[in-house]
Length: 145
Image (cartoon, rainbow, N blue to C red):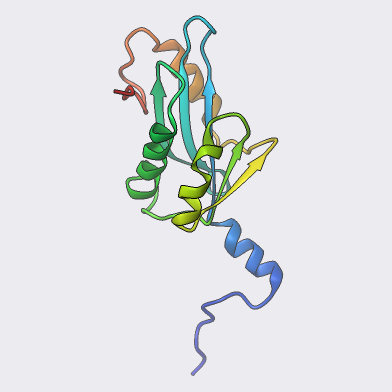
């Protein structure tokens, strides 16, 4: 009786295995300088998934970024709860301050110049902008306390 292979056999398979556990996180101001709309979004572009989204009226603190990431791991919008092996982010968005904390839970922070976006990302940003006044009726509408 042949047993099922539980681990990858070669480096190429191993790289793909790890890639499946890579997420992207971004913190962007999609509003105006005088009227910011800051969005934080955790995605898995490989699987084309939004995992967590939140809208803030100010630049989110490292604690707020951490809370969005925890939400993505424990209560993702799509898929089952899990933890990534790697979190890819762009510089100057506040994620670097979480590097030690991420390392403590086994997540490697990777700073990239460009990130992949899942389908629906531009539409979500447009929806956030259109719903600026009401702040209701769209995913990720909870505001930072």
